[in-house]
Length: 193
Image (cartoon, rainbow, N blue to C red; front, side, top):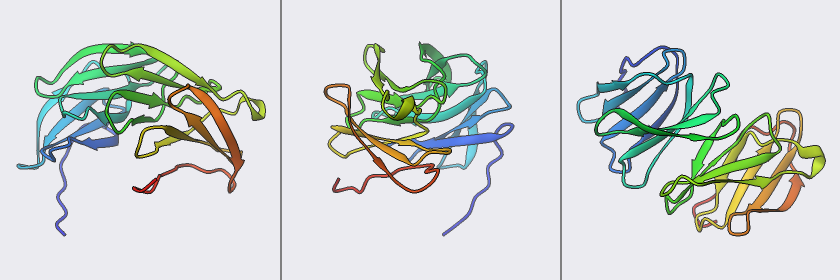
């Protein structure tokens, strides 16, 4: 294995790779920017500025768009056109934290530490919705994962709690919640589901 270091912006906090493996999109939290890195030349090929505390990033299945949370009470997710290195729009969500995308690329789900639901939006028409986490005192989610068939969203509800909730992505409803270890921080699903 070869290690390459690429200088991006101030305080890089998240990275996502385009499906074809040609580019990396890096969120520079304190730099209020996103660096687009060529993985062929290992250089920053463009920078997108005018973002507020960019954080979590996911990339569309066709590799054309990056969806990036913005912090600092902006309550939005920026849509970044990767090829043109421009902000193509923004989607309003309450306090978006970690993002994850459905396997078919049609829906992006977001955690939020200040609310008792998981938010989501369509990647085609940008319509938004929520899935309630009203059980167990409404403990918010801190991390998400999706089953390979896209039917179930797994929501870690940690940071002082021991909860993992299963959400039905078809009916937008809470299916069940189980107790796990103390303060879980992340969740992953095996490829076979």
